[in-house]
Length: 322
Image (cartoon, rainbow, N blue to C red):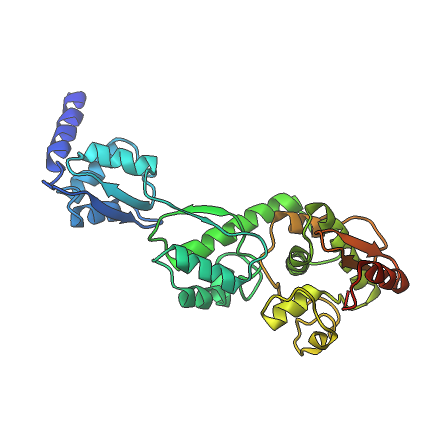
């Protein structure tokens, strides 16, 4: 009798939720965090199903209440409720692939996201990324998200919101940071926040991954000795443009981010560093280097003294700052 009762309920639900007659596919957005009732209401409004209550019943009878995934879907005409449930459970929605390389500033990230996704606006992204309350919601100890918008390849629905996109990138940062740090307090004498700042400098100074731990050691050695970092990358960040070679006059630009004028770390990250730079700061090489100069092929000459550094610049043929 119990079996017949359940069978009757299933049949009733099936007939009540027969797909409306349609000639064209329907695009449906299932927002992140939507429950079964909200999804049923969306599907009914878009004429994918006839009755949201019976749809909810079907989902629960199949034990798939927590299996329906968010995303953008194109539901062909004639798909029965069972098929709709299977589509949403499999997550076979339309996705956009976005690749964000290491070393981008927050403004560059906003520009790329807005160019790739019509649902995103660079102004909205900027406002949200610089909202301390939003950063706190994400569990980050920072007032702004630059440095925490992790560079990676993301597959996202075309209608993703600014909060969802930035949250996804910050979540990826936290995942990678946890792997790189092993969940332990950094042993380099810096706080987690300071590590991110230094990693952003290493990201823009290094070209070869093998040199990132050595470059990190140079900056850590200078910090321990109380010497200015004298990072060209921080000056370029202040200038807001790329220059193949800095002039001595560039070093006088006034900004707390100019590490030629101000000691210690700058007040925040200058870009969004990748895994290799975070790992380099957390696990730097053991050296007594205090200087480095680019050869021009992606590698650097590292020196312990200013005389050696100047000699290295002379050999390479550079007359500008280190």
